[in-house]
Image 1 (spheres, rainbow, N blue to C red):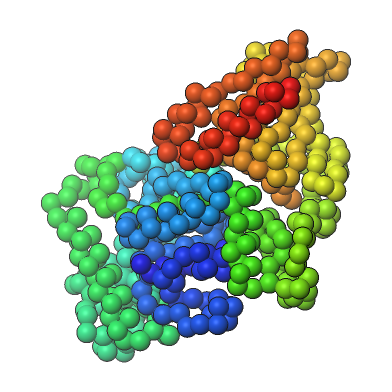
Image 2 (cartoon, rainbow, N blue to C red; image 1 turned 120 degrees about the vertical axis):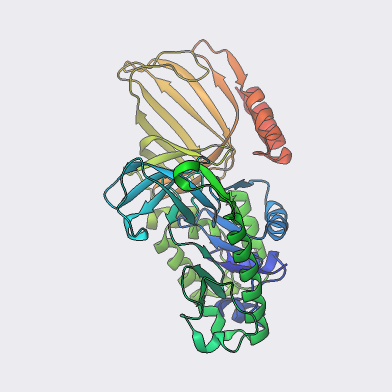
Length: 459
């Protein structure tokens, strides 16, 4: 297996994974070794929000990477992409927006920028598209589509419909392998450092996939007749989300290689500014500063980047299937240096509070007490007269307090305390179903059950 890694988790994952190729200059310097500049069977890239990594490539090799990443920490979770990178579909335009069109391809929706189509796009049109960029399940964005077909690679990309050799013809003349008819070449940046054998191997692998894609269109129905339809299922595409425990486990892996402050990945996952600050601190202080029993500097980090008292943050409620919901913005009404915060939200009237069976009324407020790193948090609902309407204790992956929101993944099982003092444990069946569906690993589920039992006994 060979794997290419990029992003804020690169050093730790280079330590964790075998067969790293096309390593960046900082990685080569930190490991003080030469990494091959050969084709990658799998590519691991940090997501735009820095919460996770995407893993794309050959199915067998991607499975190997996933097995290693799932072992990083108990709260590492993985989900396959509904629309994998490289997938080719017949789709129907369901909506036209200012900069592009929404296209239903059957397995989901994608977004086609108008600039990626030579024809005028109107609602009801049916056309063939390819997934250029996949989208994480917790993201609000749709996968990005294109009408030009490509076989993407780090060393070479093949483009269908382009004359062979129109990009980098001099280099192409030196490589024994020729791309299939009707496919042109785009050499990647890393190709400058690769030898001819590696380039030939990369081109041969890409050409094989291009030929298979061509074959998929043999006797295939026209998009106007077939939509929605999948012509080609693309590359294996997965999203691996790291919880707080996993980020600290990655810190330990990175620390075996280079100076690493406590909470390195936890802070870097917050904002780009925070990520840059970590780099500066580690460069100035050196490894000796972080030796011994040094705690994650929650107070310093939140004082610098937020949130502090008076700020408003979102409660980002992740689900075990990868989706995420914003429970509403809350005001930070108190904050302690040890990571504890109190949040307050005004509730909209209508409906009932889950499991409590109490109607939401005008003037109700939700008071949530969270603590960085804790596997649960309570929310007390009060009426406008201060009357307590019930308490809901959410069992979740360890809470992380980022500048713009409090993040975690809900683990289904919860504990409620009714206004009359009755304590009830709920949704164990939903957790069992999530385990059966493969969304929650059994060790994580067992941790959730243990936490729920401890909270139930405490109440």
